[in-house]
Length: 539
Image 1 (cartoon, helix red, strand yellow):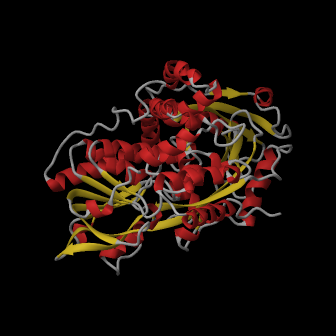
Image 2 (image 1 turned 180 degrees about the vertical axis):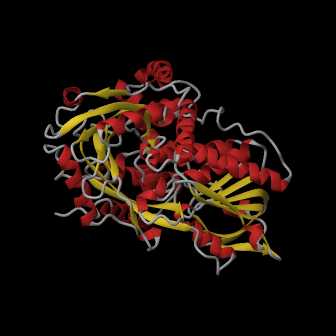
Image 3 (image 1 turned 90 degrees about the vertical axis):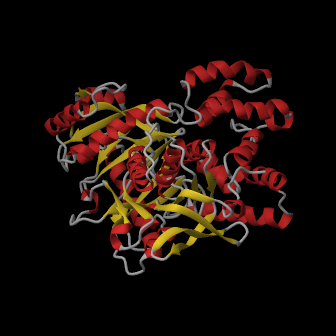
């Protein structure tokens, strides 16, 4: 009872495009050509949004620090795409205020900060978010009473955007692709590329839920595997030199200590990082260090945790940073350059047509940022269209994502009477609309049809059983981890969602027909995932 693509059925078809990778870039690539009328399949070896996408700072922004690198085009692209996402996904992408304090000894002094803010506003002409304003030390302290006063020279207040759940941005892109005929399969790993002579014509894909392998054939294959993209490219040419420079970034989740998102300047190495309000807590990050190991093995280390704690405590001395709820660690896929410092490496992307290397039929996407995923996908699909002789206009900048067809406040007002009629309170309506947008009506319909599904998953929290059924039936969730970590944020609570695990796994067992042993195994797997969220936290 899942809308996950069936690989056995997919093997009987031939597609115009096979996308390998179900992060935000892969899901964006799948959505665009499906909307243009191409036959599309996507395979992802884990769950949608499992990798770098889910381990990000959860921001949609131009990137103030790229102004220092004079990469004005990258900043302009990010700010342009920020506006598109605010319009097509208003339930997931929201403007939030950022405060940038400036201290004696910081790399960004008040004059530099003012110049950067003016330029940031100029590069985002036509935006819907407010412009910046400069702040005196007293104004900074008024906005953030917990901030350190010593050495404070002033600051700036400006607006950028947050995507609280980039995992759901992946899911909604995938759902839109499905709506336009695409087949999407998570837990489906491309083991080798299929060849017709030198030409790539698809991939041999292992269904990781059953162990069976299936040939998925396509006229073109797009490698959108993020930090694994070099490995996928080597399936075509084992001797290919790496294109990526992979760097590691970690984040900490701690008790809330700010009123705004804060831009922080690390004194130790001059790095810029953030402390961002997220789901009632504060998300701190990120680091940026070279990483040579497998992206599958990345974890936060105690030294990295201490670095963020110490640099944050320098600015917020009274913050509760001794209580770290969770850590995440992800790997950025940056295009190699001669830059020595990790933070100086450009976030620009590169699209490679391997026909130039004697392997037609394969395109690879390297680098890029979450913010720019839609534009990168559009550029890649324009190239696909030229190769296939199918030129159709891109509509992804104006067509809302599945839950984004109206403003969240309108959806809340429209659905509140229905929710109240079945006993749901205002907090629950707010929660449902914040996750699903207009698709919250689908969750309500399940609860209206079955009174049991109106029950809360855990006391004192807004989630209801209907959400589990919706995730399984309509959002390709096939494990408790999919639901707890990537369809909702339950797994990022201080207890990592373990209090909800038994009930969630029981519902999955009922929906998917699991045996008691399979259910116990899924619980063990989630408990291991919960342990991973404590990596790097010293007792």
